Amino acid sequence: MTRRDDFSKAYLTSIMHPLLAGSLLLVDSDSWLHQRKLMLPAFHRERLDVYAAVMADEAERACATWAPGQHRDIHSDMMRMTLQIVTRTLFGIDFSNAVGVAERLVSTVMDEFNRRIASPVRLRFPVPSIRTLRLFRSMRELDVIAYQAIRARRTNPQPDLLSMLVQSRDQDGRPMSDREVRDACLAVFFAGHETTACLLSWTWYVLARHEDVQTKILAELSRVHTGPGESPAALVQRLPYTQAVLNEVLRLYPPAYAFGRRALRTTTVGNHAVPAGTTVLMSPWAMHRDGRFFDNPEKFQPERWEDGLASRLPKFAFFPFSSGPRRCIGSSYAMMEATIAIATILPRFKLSSRVVVEAAPSITLRPAGGMPLTVASRN
Ligand code: HEM
Image 1 (cartoon, rainbow, N blue to C red):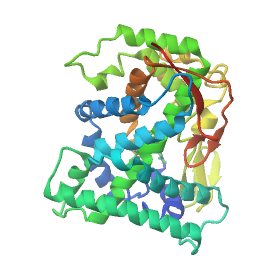
Image 2 (cartoon, rainbow, N blue to C red):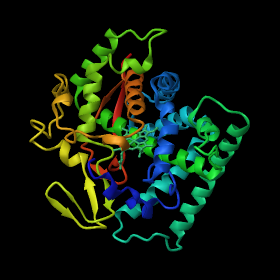
Image 3 (cartoon, helix red, strand yellow):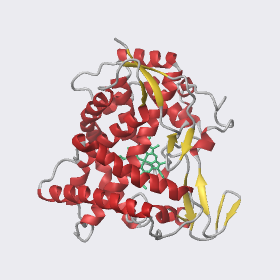
Image 4 (cartoon, rainbow, N blue to C red):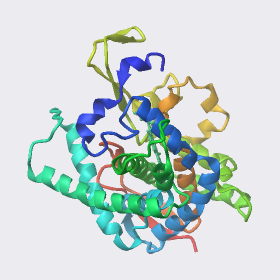
């Protein structure tokens, strides 16, 4: 925060290149600030209110095929739901009829990134291999979808993020090129899709293991009126216990469990000397389980958030969405999406689990082997 100019976010470029090379997620310069300012209105409260209907619709669709007594991989359901929500709300693209294709393309790209993150070798340009060919083929197919949507918005603007980017002008009156719009959209897509799916999968997991918490959320939901004229974005503030549960899940299973910067020059962090070129990692996972800040840190205990703990903690003791100017742009969007999914699905289904699911740290904190849960109808 105090030596921002000494660090670069481009440490990920060697992994993400060339998918997201010029995008908000990775660039450091004025271009980042320009893109961030352009995108902010798409995450304002009034826009979130508009997205709420799509979020509720997709949450209903996600549980429409659940059968009582069924064992399901809820993580697949959440991945599909968050994919549809982000593409419908921000880009006006509905994959209802081809969601399998979209999932295949996205998972090919994510799997390749995960492999590169785990690999000790960092090559700026990947060597040709079957995997690289598959990655490039998937990226080409994603590009066809993205460029089609961009062209459609240039002729027929809609009230969404894609149209805002297409219609924007920089200080010199220059519009963004199709490539720039595509980079920006893919960055938002990849930042917002799997992260929120992981938050929800871990939430269902802890709920499945704590029936009393399911009961308390249901009691809170039944007390809150959600009629016409109520702002869905404001609903989040009116469900403090549900927010405490989500905070506790973000504490124990932060989807962005570690992120980093590369030192551009020799500098310091606290009392530590940091030579130029060093990658410095910050880990919400490690901080969130630190007994200096959280009593009984390994225990799932949503009540700990109910007496204003968040405002008493030092700034970087709890930072699932990071902090400062590069804080997650989609944090309110994600919290609303998760709240709406819980409010839609939990009154219909009770979840239970007998298995222990381990975390599989990849780009996000995925559940290892999916999230196998049992669902039972409440009727
Ligand atoms: C639970 C869900 C989410 C979590 C835990 C999360 C976490 C984070 C974190 C920790 C960062 C900062 C990373 C860094 O500085 O290296 C970040 C940045 C970002 N997030 Fe999220 N995110 C979530 C959901 C979303 C959603 C739903 C969207 C959009 C729809 C989104 C869009 C972005 C973007 C565009 C950035 C880059 C911001 C910038 O550099 O100015 N995120 N996110």
